[in-house]
Length: 235
Image (cartoon, rainbow, N blue to C red; front, side, top):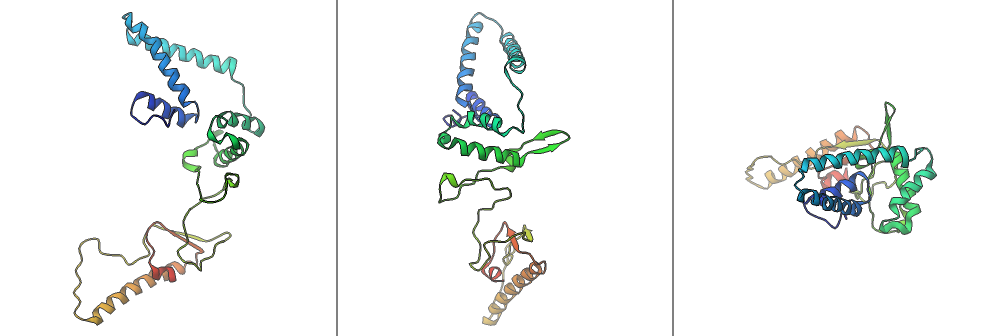
């Protein structure tokens, strides 16, 4: 239901909230909301004020929550992986991945437990910030697994770079490894070939100095969100 609707209508907001908070039941919540509105319509036709209808629905909500907590719900031990897997499977089983339900449940549970934090006796799980599904071409669904760390799906900039580095020393840059162009309009007057050669030489010297400063830190891996020139790749 969450994916069928793509508008700003109220039912889309309901489905989106259900999907974000629960992850399942998007179609059911739309059907339920429609039925509740259908029942409320007859009271409006009897000239009953909408605030009274809303108050009654809120009271019904409170009664329903109390009933669920006291009579229907059962305590769940967060250390019982088998019981937790059953809960996850009840949701995953309704999705297209139902064929790989056991594997999906195992991965989902492991991922949640990996990003779970406990502060002041309260467990916090922020899967939107700390967990992500990354798809890589090739292989099969059975090759899926949880990576306990950070994944950056990028290619190396030079063929001679190492592919495996254990316990690396990492440098993070928010600057470019290219010759920095002027932010405003810049004019350069070249009188002869020597001047042009000198300009290229100055650019190379700048890149060489920047790379030398980085190399002095003896990093194993350098990450930058901006460009890397061919000359910088060489160093």
